[in-house]
Length: 131
Image (cartoon, rainbow, N blue to C red; front, side, top):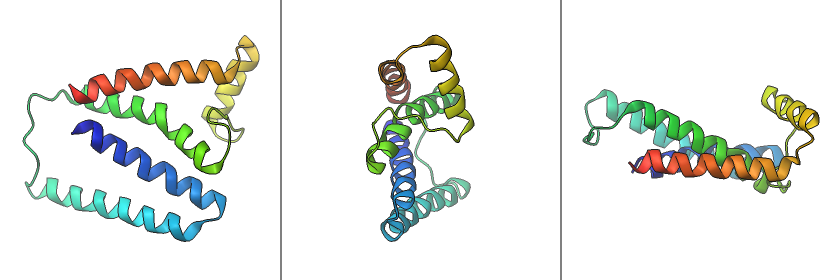
């Protein structure tokens, strides 16, 4: 269940952002509305005592799994919707600048390295979230 929730949160954040940047703001708005409505309903449910029973869930694995899953999937989904290469690294965000500096200094091909690191992150996150 945790894996499905994390996937929902990542997919419904990455796709509208990419569609909006691509100029398809109407469909991006609809998807973003669904995302925000779902999150809002869940927050109200939790604060009003309506939540699923928790079975010995370590919050560190839950948060770490979500962060690793987001790292593994968000940029790839965003780039695919934008019709960029899946492992494209931009130039504007701080993380993009850090990756570009790393690849320039080490001369490691960015596509292969990012694919490997993100695949390992995906495996770890799925393991932690389905625990």
